[in-house]
Image 1: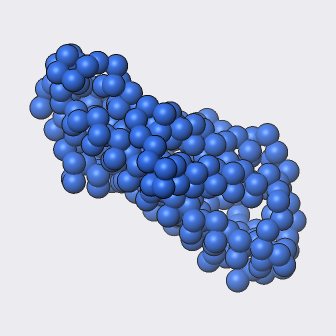
Image 2: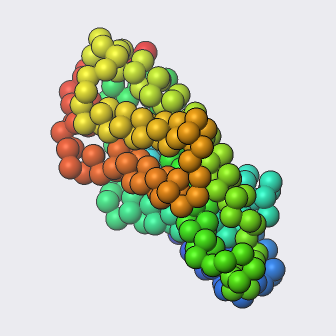
Length: 282
């Protein structure tokens, strides 16, 4: 990691941490000032996060798709970007920002703790389809996190009868709006996840001559995508609503986390096989 990259990395993490605590303070105190401070810090952190990505790209000569650290700095940026875009549309989304922004600095810290070493791109990674695949995979995760955040606040508010909730919960919209917003964020994530699956299949065809190989990463990506598909099917076809739908959405996020991070930790050889490919990939 270069000196400028490290400088902006710590600015990013600091902004995200303080922003998350500002939103948390807003939730407990109702302070509009804390909300404004949190949003400004989230924006500043997002800009610094983008600079981290840009510096990493320029210093390595390739998009940050090679290591856990590189993937995590990108997914952190997208999680905050999706949150800020939603925040412009819905003012109450600042409260789920407690979760989205916290997620961002946690994954950045995890990536930093793993390794910040810059690795060269092997031929398997030099494919335009990989860039599409990774971008939409990370975007889907960012949307799923925000959808889960809306669901968590639904569950918190659902503990009280309408009108009997503590003052801080009255800053939130009605439970039906929280639920519907969570479903919309998940729908956006599912669309991005669909593009991820398609582009990944094309990349696999170029690598191995077949669209699907049933390795652990592919399998868990498909499992996560199917479970989110079941979630949307139950919501729009069978009319599922309320707590059972929200809990299912949180369970869906667990499968996404497994496919994105846990599989690589348990079966690292899956990724090592990519380094063994020596022919150029378009």
